[in-house]
Amino acid sequence: MLILSAISNDPMGNKFLDVTNSINYLAVKKIIEPYVALPNKRLVFASSCSIYGDSEGEPKKEFDTLNPLTDYAKSKVAVEKVLQRCDLGNGTTATSLRFATACGMSDRLRLDLVLNDFVASAIINNRIEILSDGSPWRPLIHVKDMSRAIEWAILRDKNISTPYLAVNTGSSSWNYQVSELAKAVANNVSNCEVSVNTQALPDKRSYKVNFDPFGSLAPNHTPVYTLQDTISELIDGISDIRHLISNDFRASYFIRLHILEKHLKNRMLSRDLRWT
Image (cartoon, rainbow, N blue to C red; front, top):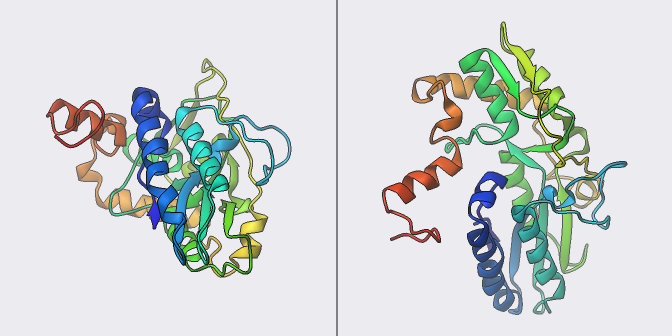
């Protein structure tokens, strides 16, 4: 069983606080507790490196103190605690993949992800506006490498590690400051400028992460995409569908929050985000 369903980023979590807890934690808890008690099952939970929150110093390891700052991150910690307490059935494994920040081209493109946002802004406006001061650290992972990690978690040998495992999922080489990401994108798009919001309040969501254990546990499933690979792919992919993306793309339906708002306005969803 793969648990991906969630109110899946901070802007949505901030707007739907109660629903975030109901879906991301309570509903997931209700599903996983009876499932992992069964024998010979495989459960994979999509957790997040955002659970480290505001973390200075050395890259964070799995047993370091957690510091979730948002309801989204807190919901991930809550589910991990449930899995830690569960008595797993004979032969059953449960794996919490603490994913780095997603990026990359996909069939259902999201532009509310930091690298994807920067590439779209560079192509559409020849300008990248960093909404923070550019100093926060972010680890990233390509969406296709996330899929490869999920495959490993489903197939992993329960005898190699513990039946329940929480592991940082990504590559240590993919820890970047936001300003570095913007400059890397600008270097690939002609006449692209980068601006920093010097008046922005400090973004406390800043963390470097150590992914060495994942590399040791899953040597055949570690990330293969580089930052340059991903930027080039996004430039090609977004250019191909440029006619579908408005200049004000941050107000478009490529932003997940705006899709929810559209469904609410059309009464396709209730206020607790259930289909009507």
